[in-house]
Length: 503
Image: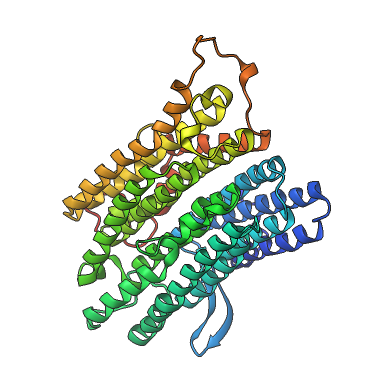
């Protein structure tokens, strides 16, 4: 049942952007009463998710939703249009905002973090900008709110206020702003000059008479201008941002920032270039193989990191390029796999970061080398970590299986056997840097007298943290057995299909 059926469909777009913004203001107003402040956060997040569900319902029914906000230049303005790829991202972000808020309440209190009101306020502002990105109707709108997302998350990265946090924040802000201004802005301007429009259009906005050399340059500018996708060498901001509290890491890696990056690349490929157009550009293969190199190199770097969050950060750099590669394969099946990976990677990686934060709160351990025998003290956390790890690896019965399957089929369909090999090698590297962690926790460092384990040994994190990682762990299993609603949504994207030979 559509809880918002009394509203005009287009009003749902405005509310989806406005509700988190109002929530941020209410968080400030209730900041001196922590219980009320956190209730406001949870209520706001829940309302947003119901709004997105209503938008999803209209999308499946074929109802077009659009909203023109303001015209900034003749023929160019801030406007919004709902399409299936944006709905997919909005579903992921809005649902995980609820879960991450529950987690953040337990983490921020359990870790006695400072400036909690500012944290929840900036988190809500970030989600507001994410909703605007999801439903952006043209490149100008996407660019504006892409920058708003960068600025609203900067205080979260520097939350601790330490020298390390400030340094990490400078790297974060410096790389993301410089790439967007130096590359993305010129890509947007170039698109306007060549195509005469910035609107997203099914099949792309360029025609066969446009210079392939110019379009190839624009593709490179888009890929590197969208720095949140973390393609090497513009990836350092992501590991640098790991100085932030773990709920921020979850926001960066699953709910908002990096997903906004790869979503933007996928949206540009589908709605600005068009999948068919990519096959004619010389730079498509160049960026494809740079993405493939990013997958392997970042996985190799991850294996060298003893700090758990650092290892997970480089894992994210690798996994993001799965989506970039899926987009640049110019195959309808690969594009479907890339879109699905936005969701499956989100639930898997957020589970791993939730577990990293739980370990920090309960045992104050940061390094993997210190986690021997931790499974006796934190069996629920380490079981959840195992589930998340298997999903990221892409093994049944976890969600990541399906997105990697479609990416592999898409690479075969595009006759890119090198990419198939990269995906296979990457999965082996995933095993090498993820599975030793739960193995070390459960099977090493056990007491020499082999005393039977008992629940009295457990020292798990606070209940809200366990609830959150339990929900996301279940999500990893649920999306393996019941991925069809997301697949049906992805099949509504123009030119994208999970059926082989649908190109």
